[in-house]
Length: 434
Image (cartoon, rainbow, N blue to C red; front, side, top):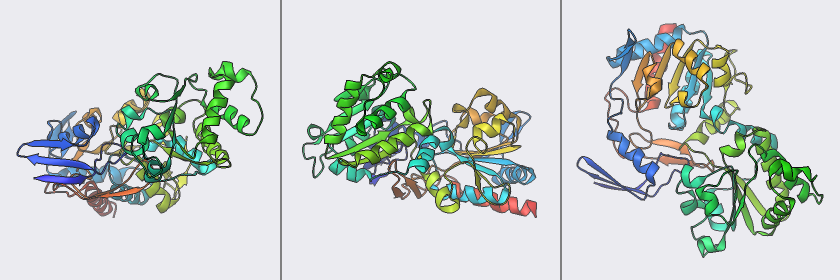
C-alpha cells in the first residue's frame, strides 16, 4: 500500500510531501530526512511501549488497562499540587484535554516551551512580532538570516523546502537569488553554506543586537562592543546594509539566541530590530522549533486561558509567572507532590536535582517509547503516535496549524489516541474525587 502526501511529525517543519510504502513488514519512506525516516521506522520498533505497566516493588510489570488507569487516577485525585507536563510530540487535541484536566485538578500545566522556546514567547509578548507564513517567505525572501540556529541539523529540510533553495515567484533561481547570513559563535554546516558568517562571542547576542539598533538609528556604537562581541563595527555595518538593501528579509531565531545570557531580552531586541528594518524594506521574523508541535501548546493555552506556558490553576483560575510556575522551578523547590508527563522524556532537559525529586514523587507517564523517565514511573500508559496512528492538529514552526489524518489505526483496543487516554483518565479522576 502506497500513501502519498503524508505529514511528518518528526520536527517543526511538518513536511507534508512524505510518501510511505507499506510493503509487508517493511516501511519504505521517501522524501523524508533522516530524522523523519527514523520517526516512521520507530512505529514498529523494539522500544515501543505496547502494554500498560505499574511499578511493583521497584520494577515495572504489565497490568490491565483499567488497573493502570485506576492507579493513575488515584494518584492525581489524592494529590494536592500535581504537575502536568505536555511535550511537543503530541497533538493540540491532547494538549487541550491536558489543560482541561489540569484546570479541574488545580494543577500546574507546563510544556516543552519551559526548557525550549519559552524565552522566545516572552520576548514576543514584550515586543510583538512581524511574522509571515513559511510560504510567504519561501516565495518572496531574498535575504535569510539564521540567528542562533543550525537548521541543517535541527530541521534538515528547512533550507531545501522553505527558505533557501526553493524557487519562488520572485526568487525564480532559488539559491542564486538569495543571500544567507548566519549569526553563530560556532562554525556549523549552516554557516559553511552561508554567504556571510558572523562569529560573535558566546552570550553576546544582546550586545550585538543593541549595536545593530544603534547603527540603524544613525549613531555609532561604543568601540568596546567590538571587544565584547568579537565582531568589528565594520562587519556590523556590512550586515545591516545587506538587511536594509534587500527586497524581503526574514530572520529565523533558534535556541542559541533564546538560551544565551539575556534570554527573552535577546528575543525582544531581535523583534524590535525587525520592526525598525521595516522602515527601509519588508522584514519578518520566525522561530525555528525542533519538535513537531512545540508551538502548539503556546497557541492552544493562549486562546483557551491567555498564557503560553507555565499555567497554575491552584486558585481555580490560571496564573502565569515564569520562574515560579515553571517545571524546573517547581521541582527544584519541591513544590509539587505528583507529576503526569505526556509524550516527553523530560529528564533529558532537567538539572539533576529536579530529576532526583521527580523520582521521589508519584509519577505517571504517557509515552510511545521506553526511556529513562519510564523506568522511574509508577504508572506507564502506552501512547499513540500522533499524525501517524490518529488524526491530529499540529502547529508548524511558523505558527500555522496543520491537520493530519492517520495513516494506520491505533495499535491498542483500549485507547484511540493520547487525547482519548486523557479523557478516560479525567473521567476516572472525577469519579474518585466525588
